[in-house]
Image 1 (cartoon, one colour):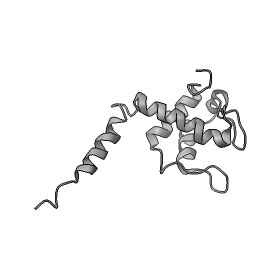
Image 2: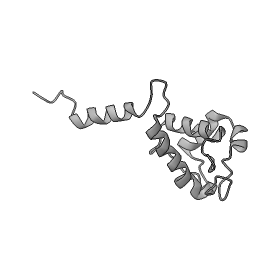
Image 3: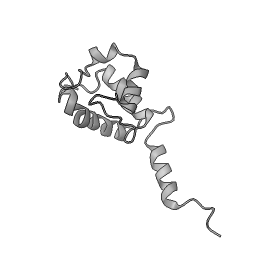
Image 4: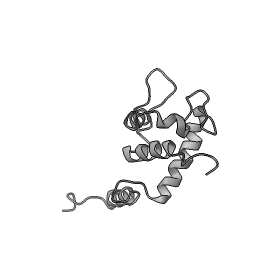
Length: 113
């Protein structure tokens, strides 16, 4: 009788994911804070705590503005095989990756901001 009903946990998960993004696909302010923290903690491990480079290349706005946004989104999500750059797709959506690239290119994640 109830086998055609979607489990409540699945419905709640769908609403939680949907509410993390505004109508235009931009993460809400809470998700943006989570993503900024993610960049500094996870990306900073290889790209430097100030994102100025280390094992990985710099992620400064000057450097990132020179890189095509679509390519950077792909690199974030799929990684670079044979290098230390892992695929983050299990943890980040395409919208997350697009926001990260935009934030890096605009300098929104610089330490002084």
